[in-house]
Length: 330
Image (cartoon, rainbow, N blue to C red; front, side, top):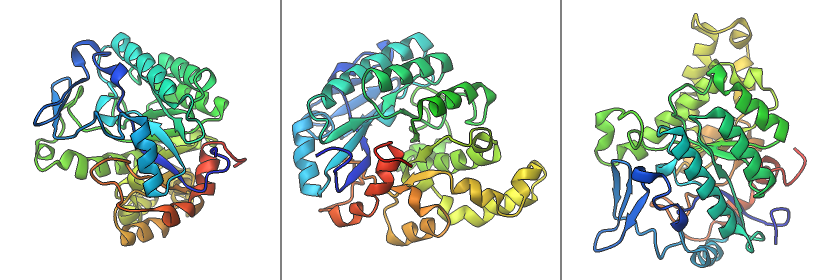
């Protein structure tokens, strides 16, 4: 079995790697197990998630769990808790190198079932390009995997060389938020309660990313750029009408963006995983985005992974995933 022959492909599956513990110096990560497992990244602590002895860290357990879930192939990605987009650039570079080498080693020998996205230090765009090139060309990864927040907007001109490099390499970019305040700005204090930084904060960041990529001209400047966003792009399906109306009516919209149908055409350029947790949410998303650019994702082994065997649901998105990952000609 390979990417080219798999009947089901999961593009949203995070890995936690033993080799990365302490690789960002005082920022960690640090993992301790006891009665209450603890994962520390900088001043942020996650309690109660048992990474060791789970599919997050044990590839044999992952493959067995994939079999039970009806998943043939899975693309592993960095843990959103440890992007390290705000720490010292040299520390971030060292962490990303260590991470990508360790993830490539985990996938090695299991390439019939597993692939990988790369961690890259977005606070240093030049090195982010270099590490993406190394990860793709030397380690066999599919492309970079980044957060939504690293001190500048996704439409900042400083990122144009990064986007240009991805187009030149013909690789996709995957964007998935991390919780605010791990190693960067604290964010809204209300998000520190009830896991709202993950439940609501992620959706807000994803929605903002969609708007920024379109309103900020990123997709217009880079017409061949492929970007995939997690969780259906947050609230994009629900807020589509408001987002489209703003593109036509607000004073900051360019003449090109405000033209009839321009927002919709750009939105149709984006890719989304369908990990949205409810069928009516999925149908709302499908009503407004390009259904040929929807891919299957699970947040595998996470708190919100879909239960049971998902083979029938996932199979419908396999061809799209192969196109995104360059397993078939787009």
